[in-house]
Image (cartoon, rainbow, N blue to C red; front, side, top):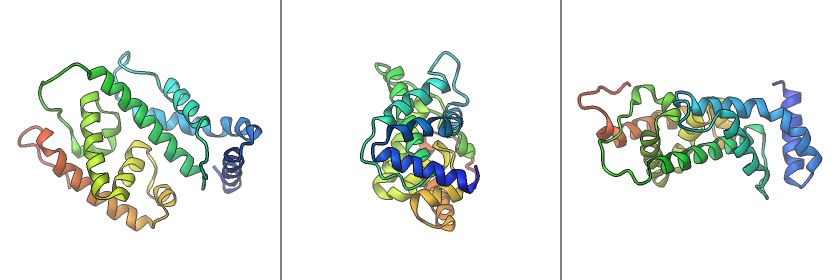
Length: 198
């Protein structure tokens, strides 16, 4: 998307936040493709028939976002980051419902060597990751947000930096530290003897 289109999208987001319904109608076709990409990113590797389709996830997240009030949209990346967070919570709610009532069983096996793929793991793994991410957030909220934006939203380093108002170098440092922290926290869930990538 070019700079002029990006600016227009930001202006439409800000107008919508002030209650302009026409801006929302103009905004919808501009953001749908990116929302669909984010949903696809979060849902890849999901088994068919086990959860909603990407289109349904986009629809549910978008409906929830339309109901959000008093948001000062700073730019389009801010919007997409919030959409990704909503999608993550929708998928987590569904994962928790799927395993509700199931107790015990082996610890989930999580492959941290492929951390960008963790956003679409099976229900127990997704919940284990979410729990660890919440623990990280209690220790360092910014690092947890970097992780959320990078692999749940699929945002690049620059977009993550824009959303958080920090430098790209800081994003990279936080990403590296957070990955190490998550590996340490989730290592009991890894198969024994499994080496962790650097």
